[in-house]
Image (cartoon, rainbow, N blue to C red):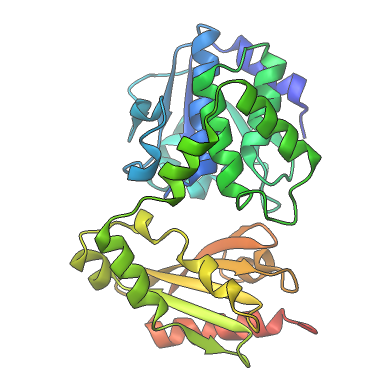
Length: 323
């Protein structure tokens, strides 16, 4: 694996770059992308920021969010992936990324997932509560001052991926990175208000409906929530509006693992996992070709709903040990 100084040297040498973020971007992916893009701007390195889909509404308050494209128009020298454990996480942009890599483009991977496959020429992977902590360290090495745009983006990623500083992997480095972002102009009150204290009536009704039908399995140690395409369509909502549903069941005392199944299309579900710590859900997700973190992971599962639920139930049971 490469070091931060080595990654910084590679980025400084680029004449142009495209920054890739993972499909269905969360705050850490968005924050990592915006902060790094702004840093490259300040270094006078032409760059573009891409994601396969539409940016979730709740992140559009960030300066720099308007830079996101669904496909690059720049024939860049370098391709940089942030917060993506493997190239498949780029979704529809995976083919474009692989084609560019095959043609000799410089590829860089900056991530914090334990399941990262080191799929680029240059890889920096350090398991932290957020990838924005890695990006903050890289920007410091680049010698770029953290202005309000960079600081707000970094703070967004740190807050969201650390569970508002509540996850077990939060440490002094997390708070130091957040303090530096605050010193750089990040307004925590505005960020938390935009992220957690605003939602549409339709999204509220979706939550109420899904949570009222939670399934409890394995002697109540596993909870499964299901979000159907019909429910999303009824409220005029997108997949991004389901974020946070998976976390609710972990507040129930007997539950050790929570799963949210989001219907992508008939016979295909995106499974998001959360664990209180006794079950490594990265290993559970790996059974289905997915991955992520020990306490938070995801994968795609195919089949009829009841078949999918049963397969997931057995996979969780197989990894429960003494939980």
